[in-house]
Image (cartoon, rainbow, N blue to C red):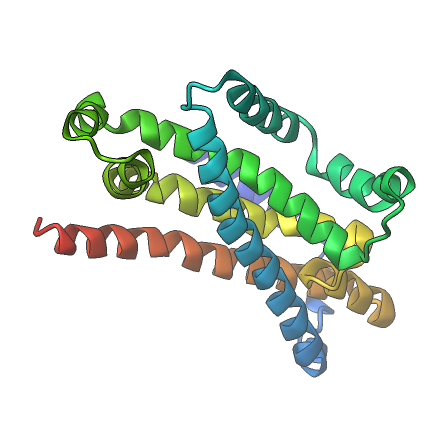
Length: 242
């Protein structure tokens, strides 16, 4: 397998257009650093909104799937299935172009983008939380019932804390996914990193340089987010005295 990979790399290097590669000028991108930074900030804001709101609403959805009230369970399950099984691009376009026709309420591109990414994030995070709740031993809930602990306190103090501890890695992985998925909002020109990058590429006719830089930025920040998993796990382990 290693030999095959080395062969593919060698073949790619042989077939590279070295004239184009030698003519690449990344220095010209320095003058657009402010614009790129603004695009990156917008991407990070969208990611934070997806993670924070996704975890909050996803937790509510996960809890609803566990309650004895059937309509609440059906709503939560239907919501999750709808937004997990339709492409985010379709959701973005429907919310921005179709929803105003149905509701009579117009939204800006950024608002439509945030709504779409939060709705889908809630569905995915809801499934993660539901899996975390199932990982909590049934005895926790049984002991809470035996002690007469109120339902709200039982969820907040007994069931959800240990559930969240096992959900940290999937939470981080999903956050990285939405960090990358925010690029899809370029269809609405919301001003995130991908939108800014394509605008610069079209203005200066340097698509290879700017898109390579954008890919590098996505990688570096995605990698930094992934490494936060280890920090969180070590921090929790220290608190628990492991």
